[in-house]
Image (cartoon, rainbow, N blue to C red; front, top):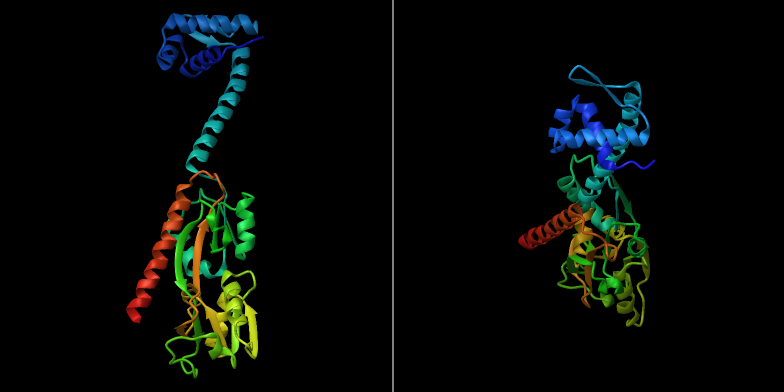
Length: 302
């Protein structure tokens, strides 16, 4: 038994329209063409599907039962078409985002609220991890978007610069070094220095800067960039951080340029060859705008 899609379509049209004439109009074909398709279908399935009662076609019990199966088929096709639309429009597709802590608040939070807001058709998974883990997850296609510090992997063509600034020394306003125009490793030898974790690119450059000195700081505390800001505000030591982390922490500190100059950059990364997703493009642009605005506000206060 080999059915043709056009025959099934004609059968469905007659069942839905209630007659040959209306079915022909719905299919945009002639009435004889519909009648021929129905006859061919009846021959193939070896059943009488319609009986004439006066000028009307009345479906048989077999036709009603067959129609139920046909509707299941068309429902499945409609679901496939809807799935295709969802894929094309990226609806109901879980978007997985990994971000370093410094970019979560206020940047990622605010960007998601502004960009996605009440859209319930975009399920989200948001992880807060270190840059190295995020890079690995993006390369394995397990994150659709990663927000990271710069790294040697920046040659990747899917890396978009979000923001770049220089490292600063953060300390309370009443600290003895708070009036300096710049801070060097030598200035910190008698201080507890709050340093970011070993996976941070800032930490790698910072280690090289201190290695030039004959002596190391009397004390260090290794923690996240945000914690460096919080502990610096509490007077626990001097944190070597960046302005983005300071804004995220909203820490009440004095930020003094650190010498030698250390550039701290943040990037948005995506899997190689990944299809462009409009909502992620919007998310990235919103974060860029907020970080630029943060710089302008800071420059306005200085």
